[in-house]
View 1 (tube, rainbow, N blue to C red):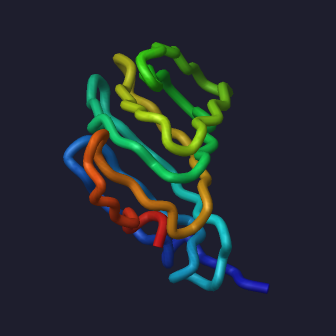
View 2 (view 1 turned 180 degrees about the horizontal axis):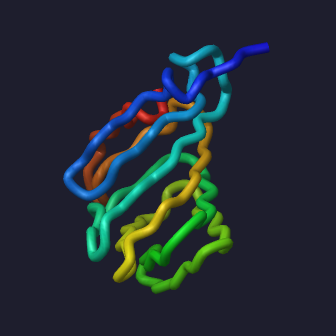
Length: 124
């Protein structure tokens, strides 16, 4: 059994969001990563591809997600399952949003069309 205290959560700031890692292999051997995403109003993440399925649940606020050219609006309580290999871009609504996200630990992300991939810190 592994207990990860909130004080031990890892916080990663990017230009568009703050990711707080709640569980990951580097925090005790989890096979999945679990993190909280907080985006300020109108913030937009980069278009990117991830080689694993992600599951997003909006806890507060609203977001728009473009996935392979399809636009979706998400509101509090909505859950979105993004398939592996799809191009996605997340934009915060006018009030920003907070979401909880999970994906397999070690999943790799990169920009569309580039062979370069990295494991984001919140998945390590």
